[in-house]
Image 1 (cartoon, one colour):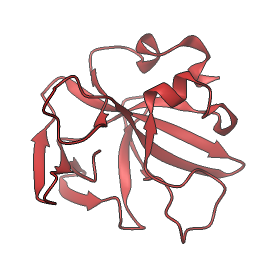
Image 2 (cartoon, one colour):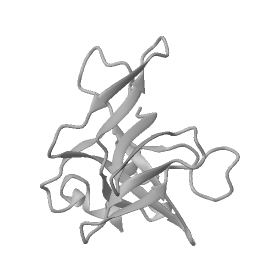
Image 3 (cartoon, helix red, strand yellow):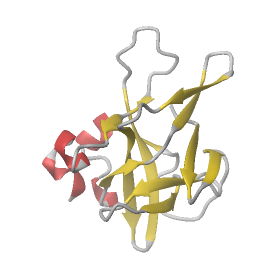
Image 4 (cartoon, helix red, strand yellow):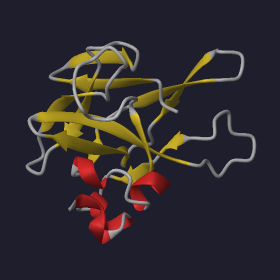
Length: 151
């Protein structure tokens, strides 16, 4: 379910994990820059946005994120981490030319990023949720999601 990520920003390597309340994810901006946004919300954190750090694609399609004015984005991440059934961490490379899809949720002045997840196609997958991978060459993430998803 993507419990940790590795990325480079301004020449610095960053490895962060969702349980860290200061965890941020790198979002690619419309102008090609990178903006760091807080990764989800934890139980003890103030705010009105949903708890957790992930958004199921089927829940997005089902309209459950509509009240948070979701905006699809690309996350510039080199690797993500998943734990197996025994709790052992495994790091997976994001293929060059690919990125992970994120969702920016809004509530008044609060903005947080959530990793969009899908049901994996692999029969022997460790989890029932896997980050949604997109092509970096696509001009907009909206090409793969319903038109009402960014309104």
